[in-house]
Length: 359
Image (tube, rainbow, N blue to C red; front, side):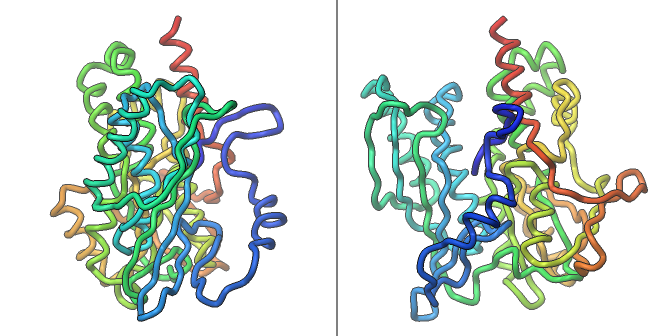
């Protein structure tokens, strides 16, 4: 999962533009292999490989994103869950982690130990084994991007889902709300600033939102409903560019259109307060922890009940339609095009808050 902010007037930090992906990356993917059921694609969080015997393996890769200012325990938990959340959207059981740590030259042994023990604990909680990797200090390496990680998940071939499986007529559900990651990151990094600006209660809730920055429990609750047919047809993690970006990716991946009711997308009061304070659009801001679910209309009640039973808020926010019907979001009863946000407002706002705190 990349992080998005403006680097220069012509280059943006984060995912490369879609035209570059289409022109350079996607046409050149090495040898074509028949066992690769799902490869790189817009909106796809994980590849899926047929490993025989009716079993498949999902594989996802992300930067290993570590923010030491969160404290090693929180930083490691979030770094692991970024990768685990993508793998969980396959609908398969998380099994293995491969981890490459490219550490700063000046990182002390004690900090490496603290980070590693926290990674170990996060993996144990998920039931994930660390199976291979590389750990070293190198010139030019620094936080927060400390290398990369892959998580592998396995299960039966009839169990996995990808956004490409969503179909016109499917309901679109969304867990927790918009800008969950934005809320949690501001909450744990700027508790005093938030308490001063938006009040102690909202600051406390924002701090607690950090623990919601994963979709692993969301996916685990939804998956038993069943995949395909009359069940779940797609799971997708709303990360960079927020819920609007994730909704657009699901529609594009499935070759469908989408109608979304913006007013149905939950925005927590503390989220609204933070977004108003820092001039952030909550619908396009980073939202790790928000799971987009597409499912057959007949499964909506079962999915929502399973999530509610586990204390996970969920809302029906739209419906997939035919591609010819386009991409539309209704806000206050007014229709407008649903487009991929040009950028994610989280990082620029986060940087401004850091500068303000240091004054």
